[in-house]
Length: 412
Image (cartoon, rainbow, N blue to C red; front, side):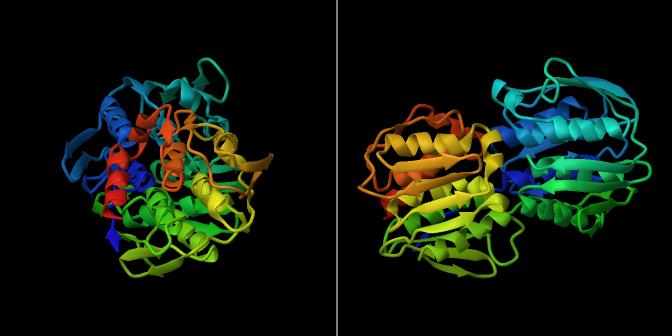
């Protein structure tokens, strides 16, 4: 058995930073993720006038329930989708100020429109400075009254999370009606974390009622990143008889992406989930399957990357939203699998991988997407000699990935 220590969850760290900044008092985050995305979020908070002290193993955030500590700021969100969507929402709740937000070319391409449409409906003075529905943008903050708002979250659950996090900072609270929602487990993370910071959201079907009144500071331990853990679980799944155990994730974990181990179990892997750890042991051969992955779509590339080693076709459905991530992940997977000599077909929201001969190592086209690199690293266990055109893009969520993956291979 090989034990792998996974760094903190990006999703949890980003939400915790928002909640801590908005709370009354000082919050300590224990074992936050240290990566380009989370450092960009913390830097953005600093530019908005929030006090952030980063030390190894813990970050301290001085909350400002009244909003940013400066009346003007320019914030660069880097590649971070949570940074680019959450920080403008946080700033909009401030009592007064003008704030400019911009992002990397990659993030500029990603949509923001449904969230900004909702913010405008709530009275926020918001202007997209170049392309409607995308960064860069300007917000003039005057506080938010609150009330009823409708939201289309079919592209990203982050739109809904941003509004949920905003709710307690409005005068009257929010009543959010969601017309469509993708990646629903990420919303459950948000609701659970808001509860820890003192806010209980009432959910009735597609309607979320968020009370006013603000947040209370706390000490919050960030659990390991389940999406990152998927690569190591998948590594065990394609290695007959090998085991990987990840501590810190278990039956009480918040993250829906831990359900990826259920996918591996359906494919024949031996999965043991305890209170505080998960172990995956690889079978002699993985089984093919057809599976909707709408709710755990960040692990779609992981499954696509191990599909060539199944005993039959692997068809992944209902993943249209993966086309508007850091890259078009559905086509990125198809392109790279074909380069490996694998038969692949795609449609608007699906991909089907048809195993044949052994994949042949090639240079992976990463499209600057961390998840493409980490997913195809797993394929490389059975196709030695794999290279990447941008291996360093893993810094977005796991700067030490290549070293950790090499250590796993040495341990085996």
